[in-house]
Image 1 (cartoon, rainbow, N blue to C red):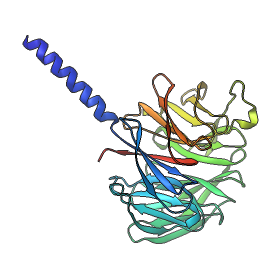
Image 2: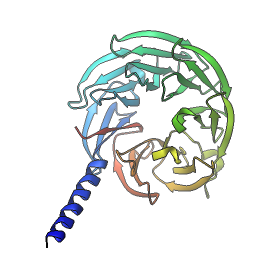
Image 3: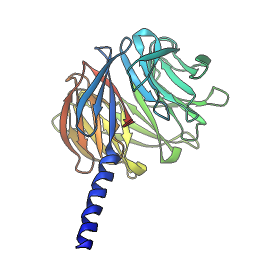
Length: 325
């Protein structure tokens, strides 16, 4: 009897731990509504909607999740918001038309792509001052920073390049060509690799970080979808960087890429014009922003199946995870 009780308690404890592992919120910027929607990752429902500046796109949290940063592109500002209240605390200088950004591992410096000015702006979030502006290619968008914080990446849509920035000197040290209209960049394998998606080129390019050489290139082909509509944009890596989930824009599919072999293993149908995504806490579920259909698709990572569609605002764009407060 005692054994049975202990077994039952153990089962309950495991269930509670499992629930806690996934507990949290997905924050979604709604480009056309000037709002951010907050989704509870347990109930899979929108629990809050907060107003933002004009045309919110990029979104990220501080390391302790006490602040959320949002690129209010048409307001020419990065807004700092208290996630517990939704109150806008202040704006940071960002240069014109900030679209995407990345927070340095020091939790102090934001690297911001300024699409209209062909620059990357570096802002100190504590002093609220611009510390550097770096000339890059035409129409910069994607931003990434290496895990050790030594390298920042800006991708330029019109120049079709990834620009490599030394974060100590705030200067370019390399420029690498990618296919047409690069949109998103991420480091993988503890910084050993750097991946870039090319929307019009329809590819993902993988670079060796040590020497900036091209290591592999991945193409996509979705059955029944014209190749012109297969446009890779945002992507995220699973635990251990074993796989990448890649948003394929107006093809309305997510691709699942094996990050060891660089082979496409699967395609998952989601909402219309899938753009970016965020995982829950334990990466068991993936939340994709679908701009045209104005919703978020929830994907079960293990089965690679869409579980639910959650209505948010008009033209959801960016997504970021926050643990339950």
